[in-house]
Every structure is written in C-alpha cells, then in structure tokens.
Image 1 (cartoon, rainbow, N blue to C red):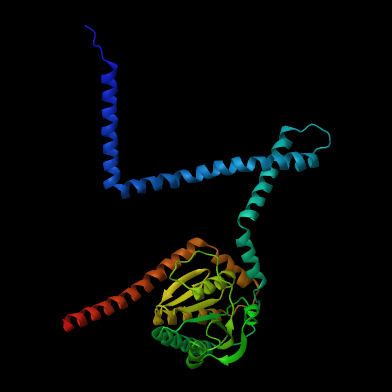
Image 2 (cartoon, rainbow, N blue to C red):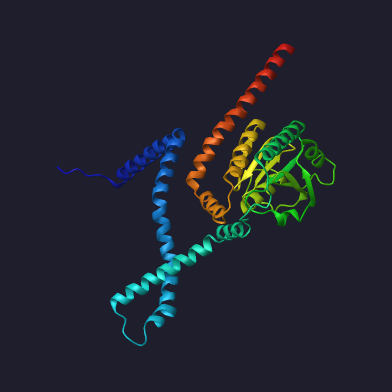
Length: 337
C-alpha cells in the first residue's frame, strides 16, 4: 500500500517548520545577542584579510596590465618574442611598482608627516640646560597646572624637545622668561590678551605666548575643545609634549604622538621627569638619534603596551580620588539628612 501525501499538507509542514526555526533563531538572537555578535566579529576578522586581498587584487589588475603593456614590455623587448622567463620578470617588476604606487598613495599623509618631522629635527640642542634647571622648570610648571586645574583656568603649554618649534614661536608673542608658576597663571588668566593661545617652552624658559597650533583632523569626542584639538595637532607633527588644562572640568591632559592622556598633578610630575630629565642625561649629539626615535615611535605594538601600562596606573589613581570625593559627598548628605 503506497502512502500518498497531498501537496497542501507538505506545504503546511514546511511552513510550520520554517516558522518554528525562525522563532528559535529570533529567541536566540534576542537573549544571546552579545555571544552571537562576538562570533560574527570573529568570523569577520578571520575572513577580512582574504576579502580585502581579493578586492585589492581585482582593483590593481588593470594597473598591473597597463604598466606591462605601455612601459615594461616596450622597454625590455625590441620587436622580439617574449620568453616565459622574461614574462615572469616583467610581471614581478610590474607588481612591485604597483605596490610602491599604492603605498605612496594610501600612506601619503603618514609619509608627509614623517618627512616634516625629519626636516624639522634639530641635530644639536641649541639650549644648554642643566638637569637641576629642568627639574626646577618641571616643578614650577606642575604647580601652575595644579593651581589652574583647581580654578578651572584653561591653559595650553607645549615643551620643545628634539624637533624645533621655531615656526610656531613666530606666530605668537616672543618672550624670553624663566618658567614660574605666577607668570604662567598670569598669562592664562581669563581676559588677558594672551590667554587664548599656547605657551612654548624651550629648555627652561618661556619662548613665546599666544602661539597658534594647527588643529588635528581627527574626530575627537565632543568633551574636548579647541585647546585639545590644537594640542593633538602639534603632537602629530612634532615630538613635543603638550599640556592642556580644561577650563570646563579642570582636568590635566598631555598630548604626545597624537594621543591624549589624562594625568593627576603627581602623575604629571613623574611623567615630565621621566621624559625630560632622562632625555637630557642621554645628551643626543647625532642627527640619527631623533630619526631613530621617530622610527621607534612608529612601532605600534610597543607604544600600545606602554600606553596600556601607564594608562592603567593613571586611571586607577584618578578613580581613587573620585571615589574619595564621592564618599565625602555621601557622608555630607547623610549628615544633612
């Protein structure tokens, strides 16, 4: 006896199965979205290099063929047949030239920035400053930043290192003054003619005030204002250390190599001591030293590890201060109640 299935029952069964399967999938996605998105992200990360490689190979094939037909084949052959060995050599040269052209086009901003840094590098330090003078400058600078942080006075201070800031000094009001807490507080006092610009420090002296820095083109969070954008911009094209005091929150931040990092006053003291006092003890006298430093700064892995370590210590210190303040506020509210 043969079983006969009517089409409408088969259609009903398949529809019911699909509805149940879709409901199960929807339930899984609704309550396990984090796990599902993590798996999708891992799959995309694994497949993205292959996908990018295929797209890049497809897009560059016309350029490779054009280089071969228009330039390489006429250059290496003179109305003679091309051997297979010569074809392989021409293909290798065309692919190499294509890769070089792509690198120059894609990484043009980075290459230009590196050349600008090398061009502005000073081989010999023009300012002869002792370690004690640098330490005194750091003490005055940190004390000024601490006072301006408490009063929420906005400030922008850049310290010149191995790369000259002379071009930016010309944009401001030239000075030749010892770094002091009182002078910095007066310069950045709201309402004074010089409070909107940047102060540039060379050695242990204030070289200028009210200087202009080109703002960065990066997309920074909205909580960062014009001073932060200018600080990141100058740190992208020089190796200077730029300190920002926010007039909105009073937070102290440092911009180095295009990165912003927040410091408490004691953390700023340690950071500046490590960066300036140790570098002065090294006494670089070769033009290769700044270039090597620039090459080292381009190593993302080492820089990220260092930033992660320093960031963990700084964030913990800032969080402890905030927790103490919250406890004090909570206790005061409890007493008032």
